[in-house]
Image 1 (cartoon, rainbow, N blue to C red):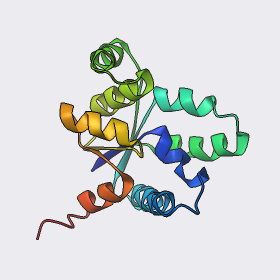
Image 2 (image 1 turned 90 degrees about the horizontal axis):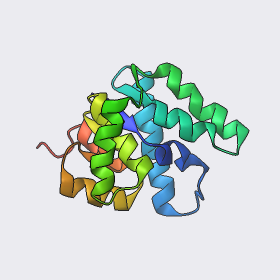
Image 3 (image 1 turned 45 degrees about the vertical axis):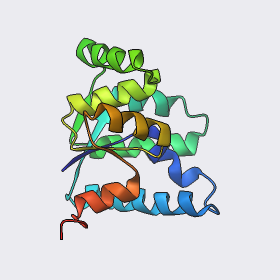
Amino acid sequence: MRIYLDMCCFNRPYDDQTQARIHLETQAKLLLQQKVLNGEADLIWSSVLDFECNNNPFVERRHAILQWRWLAKSIVVADSKVVSQANFFVTNGMGQYDALHISAAMSGKANIFVTTDDRLIKKMRKIGTVPTLLPGEAIAFMENWYEN
C-alpha cells in the first residue's frame, strides 16, 4: 500500500491535543507512520513536502518531519507533469499547495492520500481521482475493517 501524508498530517501531533478529534487523528497518524516503519506501507514523499516543511518556523518540528523523507520509498519532484495536473485542480477551486500535494500523490501512484483538511477531503470526494482520507479512515481502509 502506497500512502501520501500531506503536511497537515505531519503537523498534527503539534496541534492542541486536548481536543478529542485532534488527539485521535494524531494517534491514527502515528499508527500510519508505524506501518511505514514496519514495512506494511510505502511512504511517498514530494518536493512539495520539502518546500512546506522547510518553511516551518519551528526548527525542531522541521527536523522531526524531515526525518520521514529518508524513509520514503519514492520522492516525487514537482515537474511539469505534476504542475500541469495541479493547475487542473486549482481551476476547480483547490488551493495551490493542496493541488500540488494531490498531483504528487497521483504521480507517485499513491493508493491513498491522507489529510486532516475537511475541505480538501470534500473536494477530492467530488473529483474522485485518489481516495482522500482522514488518518483514522486510512487505518480502517488499510486494515480492511469494513470488508466483513
